[in-house]
Every structure is written in structure tokens, then in C-alpha cells.
Image (cartoon, rainbow, N blue to C red; front, side, top):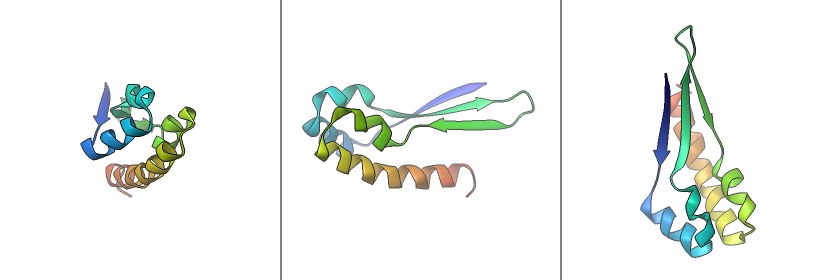
Length: 81
């Protein structure tokens, strides 16, 4: 049925915590896959910039933009784009 996939990279985690200890609650970032009755699946996620944008840290925002690009690549590979 449903699957939560956590994505984590130590180098980004170190930068995240340096920018905002409070943001540590967000790690690992997640993808959520849900299966429909017809056998298809839906991929749900939040871009890292949306997840980390609430912390008001320019350093964290810059790192999140880097992660956004990685997220886009992961999604494209996952959905066959």
C-alpha cells in the first residue's frame, strides 16, 4: 500500500545543523508513495526549500536550494522522466 522513504546525506546534515539545530527535526527528508486501487502509485513530497524555509536562515535556505536540484533529479528518475 503505502511507503515512506527517508533520504539523508551526512554532508548536508552537518550543514543543516550548523545553520539551525531546530531544523534537525526535518531529517531525514521524506518521499511518500501511495498505491491506488487500480495499481498505480502517487509520489508525494515537499521540496527541501519548502521544508527548511520556515526556519528563517539564509544559510539553510541556500543549502535547501542545492537540495531542491537533487530532489528534482530523484523525482525525474523515479517517475521515468
